[in-house]
Image (cartoon, rainbow, N blue to C red):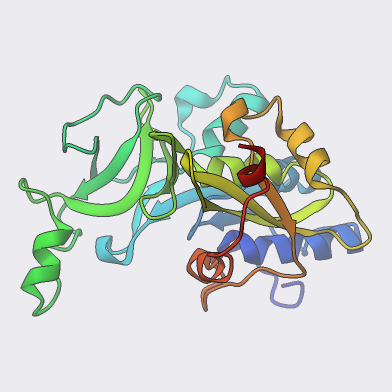
Length: 284
């Protein structure tokens, strides 16, 4: 990056975790590096804050899909945000941004009912537009499942949209944890846990529970030379998430599995820990 005078780069959060570690070790950013664009999965708030505050690198958070060619939203600030404080700007950048021109968005409940863009309600995110695919090539069955009755593409993401139009991805529909009939966002819980100084990377998956059906299991990789305990992690999270969101178990591993593009592979984690017995089994 120094040699090529890179000014801006795109990547998933895992890539930037590695770059941040290198920048901390060197005590500087790459020569001329000004803008980092994060996509593929949600960027943790501590990562955004470190780029912006510690290294003066502007973060642009985004979201999209191959099926929509591929960018749908970006956290590009407008003139209306010029008077916002640093914390308020980070609040906006912690979301995945506002829709691009010619991209329409809506969120729906489990029954397909359209939900309000009030920043509170969340449901499955659907998209439409001239660059959004209308069908999968020669696969009528998959195409029918991919769209609702009005032709909107189902993204598979659970999201909320605030009155300004900022989209916050809450989870993937397959990753959201349903505990006692209520949803827990694995992404929000992961981002909260990543604020702990001992945690380098983490993932939250659903573990089976006899009473609540599913409960969160936090799996973490620690920073080199750092130690902590499950109880310390839960105590750290106590004032950051709802009490019933706190993970029933915290496991520490040497590394987490990733896909070829650098995203966390929760599919592999669910398979690896599918027989894990939560500590709360004996407590119930």
